[in-house]
Image (tube, rainbow, N blue to C red; front, side, top):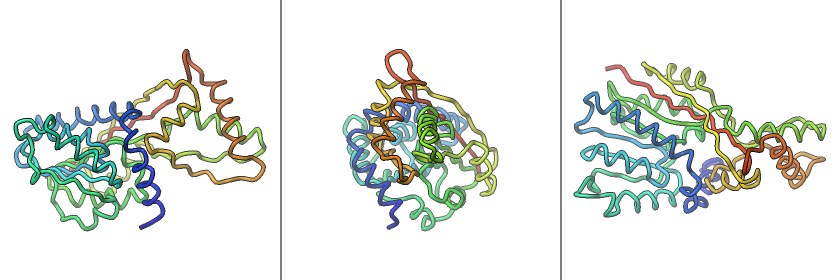
Length: 286
């Protein structure tokens, strides 16, 4: 297992019990995603579907899929076993399973990394593939998107949400100012997010058609810059591309970043944090 996979799994295992309390933006993304695939369903694509959910987390979107397609076969996978356990508790509870909406033979919850799992999955085995706030973690999106295209049946759809390049704009601005003030080249703290054009090009290269996207900026408020980072960590999203640099300790870097952030991006009652939300969907030819 690669160190990347191990780190991501460790982060989300650690944050599983706190994830839902901090995942307001992910819930907004999930609702928008559901609205799109419900629209696809209303065009008549209903009976006997095979659905794949990538990165099911605590099962919020899985529960929506169950409610919308009670007769579908659903495979939901996640890289973190602790998330799978919470998803199982959610979707197989008596409340979620009213009047036999779904039986265990129609729902598979898998502990798996999609980038390792997809190449072994059968060709043309799914009608719908969905994923909420997960694709930013892919280390080889071109290869993975290609595998998902192979796994879809004719007329199938891939629809996912992810974060765009202006996510956490305020934090990145603050870090950059601190690095420059110290005479250092700015480093990226957090992931580098792809743009809609980059995702669209990847989809085209893999043979998808009818590619559509929506983009919006969601601004959230936190009590302080420190509280903002605490919330991000509590969601398991604390990965950073930055490396340790001489002349600027981590403590000093973050202390000065908090000061810069709160000096430039304060709002009434706290600080602002931007989330660049992307929703992308594409079809396979019939």
